[in-house]
Image (cartoon, rainbow, N blue to C red; front, side):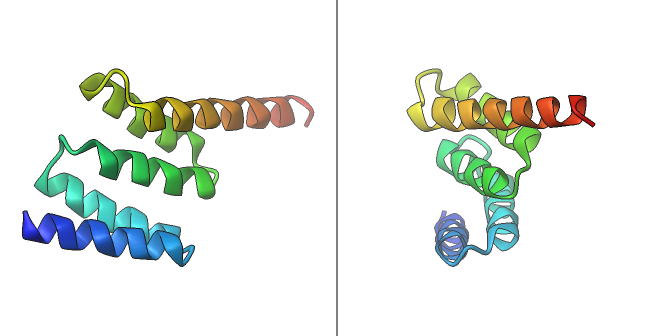
Length: 95
């Protein structure tokens, strides 16, 4: 559990610095240690949103909502992911 906390904190520090790829790596390592901890999925979803990786963000949020069906952050970030996917779809249609 100590390693999990350390990795999560390192991921959080990377997010604060805007280093989203590094944060994604830390959160992914956390998931290998505890796949049921929802906060690392919602945190990683935030990173994916910042990097315009909407499908990945949506998948992380979907996973959280399977575990905690009332997780507000997961609902909110999934909505942002859907919005990003819709904007991308409209832009592609205009090309």
